[in-house]
Image (cartoon, rainbow, N blue to C red; front, side, top):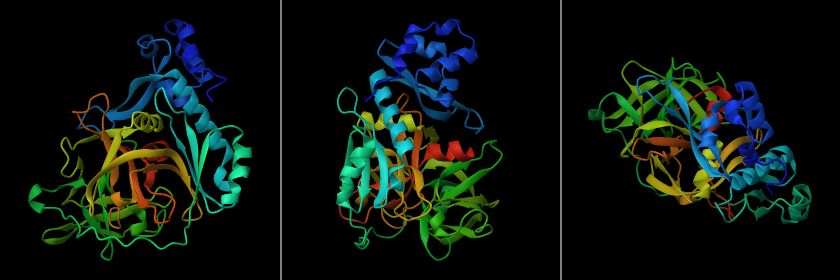
Length: 381
């Protein structure tokens, strides 16, 4: 893996002498995406050694009072690791392995720095597909898990929901319980639209079961020590990403904070490469759910495509931890990690959790990565 285009070749180019257009074209020709190339500068490369390249690992808010003030933040990674990962991402995207009958999901497991290379993980109900998959991947490293989805869901006993204390004020953090009047879920931290003109409460879309504008006007209530209190009404649901946007009432406002975390302030979210970097370093992500509270675990794979729940298959999935890290009622919680370059300054969101495995053969929590919400719709944490 990692043959062909070499990202490290850009060190041989006079980047600082180039106009912006030629600079971006040069980076794209060396294997950087157009989006990332537009966020990098010649200085980013001049400050790295040969054998290293900069990546955009996250997007951060720079002004707590202005959600539109977002900037890309970079770090340096080995160029061979980046080339290997980029190649695996491309192969995974181009092959669409879930189009093979019997394949339930696929994802990329980034390699560790200096050791293991990237590979593709496949879940299938048919052990006989291994040779077919090997032919399709043509030398790309992969792992196949044979699963039995006929097994029933595990019965959990995580205890009662974690309610919100009203005396904390009218700003409601992520990680606390909400309800539609029948079932419960967990609130994510505040989500902002592209222009920063709207801020939303966010929870799991499957709490309501619709899509698009079907759920408009559905109510969402906060579970507190004193009972339920209206948070607002659903403005839109996204079935594939499994998020419901709730327009707040005048009484309560969403907070960019995770309950009971310190520092608990959310300052942005990881890119796909940022999640891969966490995996490469063996870093653990955390989540605060309304039922299980605080749990943590390592990232297993990124850029996943899951067809577990049928059409449409869901892309941009993040797999992490173990199934014990998540139970019914935790849906809508986010996974997060401190900013690797400035860990005392705040948290970056990894993804929105939607489910856990219930079948023998696999063991993880999964949900839509935060970068998917930004790339598709312009929503930022």
